[in-house]
Length: 201
Ligand SMILES: C[S@@+](CC[C@H](N)C(=O)[O-])C[C@H]1O[C@@H](n2cnc3c(N)ncnc32)[C@H](O)[C@@H]1O
Image (cartoon, rainbow, N blue to C red):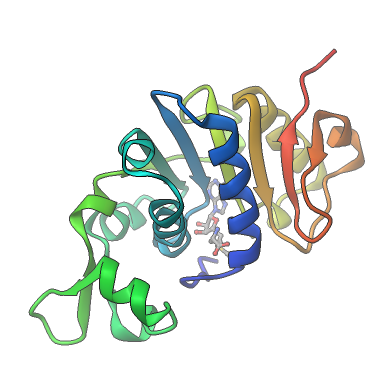
């Protein structure tokens, strides 16, 4: 199921974004992976938060890969077009800054600068292959709860390998990390399931 909405669980995205920005300050390339992105609501929420938080040069170096097992979401994410009912919950100031009317009734488009930082990749998490390496932030929320416990563990192991040193992982708030992978990550904040990669000893 691809249920999602704009500005969902912003407190956790804020914690994850702040930790990633702190970790990557001064780096030439910053990579973010939003795994199980549905139709892009979470990806563009994150892109807006990062655009607001990062300085101009930091944001210029940002590449966000959005992936989902549903191939047909690619067109929606790439076009970044949404109905008013989808975007009305976005705070007015941010909605006005990052969305414009398309000229078609009720349809608004994410601005092209934001879109230029987002690339959709058709990807199955159960392949256990990452979409790229040395990722600084992985957001994977409300996806793994549908997997079998052994599959979740293997996906977390793949995320651990995929993260750059000090990389950040955000999981849905309702699920704790499986016991088997707790040693691979340290929790950043008690209020959210946001973790930093721990180097294997
Ligand atoms: C409930 S939505 C969550 C969307 C967004 N992450 C959020 O929290 O709002 C779950 C998404 O995971 C995707 N998904 C399910 N199984 C997947 C898999 N094996 N690999 C990649 N994506 C998958 C679904 O297609 C769907 O878009």
